[in-house]
Image 1 (cartoon, helix red, strand yellow):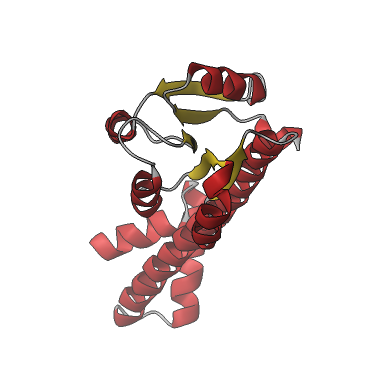
Image 2 (tube, helix red, strand yellow; image 1 turned 45 degrees about the horizontal axis):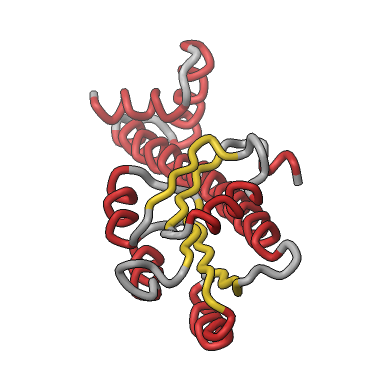
Length: 192
């Protein structure tokens, strides 16, 4: 688990309670967050989220400008981040039942055992999995772009009189001889 959390993360705490803020700060794994910001209302949090993209947002309900559920749904729809919504025990069941389908973790207060810490660890683990999947998707997209460029270049070379095999070998040979990628050679051929 420690290798996942070695990367620096950012967290936004939305709470008007100093006591809550101190509890959260103590719960946050030491040295694993490179940015910890605290704001006191949903409106201040909205402004902060326009300026910076956080990995995790912890919202302590109620807020001075409302219960916080509208704010939670708004940032869920517009931002890609882990959200922990801390609500009074009296409304926990109703709110968590609604938010669970959106992937929003709801925690009841007062806290039981280490529920906040476990929620943080769960979100970080899930975000790391998403990052790895995004990395794979990006690599695949780059590979597809390379294949498209090479295919277009081969088509151009075939139109100039080479066989498909000769065109393929020409691109590979030039890439190796010049220390460039096949895509770079293909793009040169396309631009000519």
